Amino acid sequence: MSMAVVGMIAGMALGFAGYFGGFGAFLLVAALGAVGFVVGRFLEGDLEPGDLFRTRDDRRERRR
Image (cartoon, rainbow, N blue to C red; front, side, top):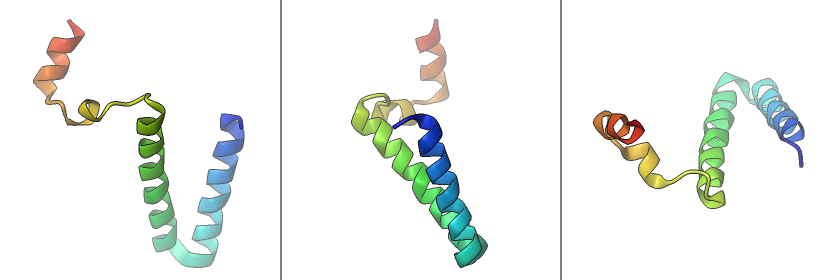
């Protein structure tokens, strides 16, 4: 499935949540979608847990 189709489905889900459930439901669906995206990246191996928990100093040293 292409990223355009995934984006369209996510947009439609947010639209339905906003229309039928109000702004609170819209925010809930958006937040859970973001969590699902991060978990999916972890499971695919594109993101490592340490990437989110490093301090700023560690990131600067790593770039050099």
